[in-house]
Length: 282
Image (cartoon, rainbow, N blue to C red; front, side):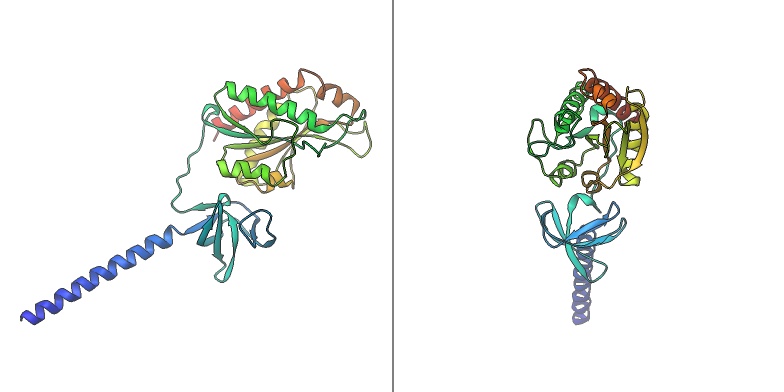
């Protein structure tokens, strides 16, 4: 009888141990899986934007995290494929996501297009786009900061910033919005006018684009509305992001407004109003 009791005691201990192991494995599996949160995500050969693109995957794809390096994940996906993916492009199962509902709670990244050796487009008089994008970004930053927002600029002076580094700022911060400022240019001068607000990821960024576009309609340069734009700074962004072309720099009438002292502040008021509406409606 004593032998039988000892046998069942050993069986019970073994069962508890096995149960604990299974629980641990399940927990480990859950905390080492993630789901791609935007469309057309690149899988790279190494942990960084400089590595070649090996493959791509779609929104909703489940990946298994094998190891981590800085802000990159080495993952297994599609059962038998492996590669590196940026951690900010996936939602890990143990992450807690909250939504900001007002500017005073928001982290906003402002991107002054071009800079340094990259002049951007030129006006009819040879004035450089980079000068005016920075003026606008600074005015918008001042307005948003006065409303309590945490604002980060990809550049705050006439310096060169690579394209890939710009969305990376927003992705690392998990910003609430990313806005890139630019001025358009037509093949023939004085043949086009208007403001266009571009988005790439419909699910994350269309609402932001629409809200901003609705408010820039009050500016002296007419709005051409919202459009899809395949620009790296918004394509490689996992946060709500837009690129705004705030007029044609090589159009005489548009440039008169663009180069005026009042235009940056007018844009700042429009962007503030658009963001206020956007966050209130989230």
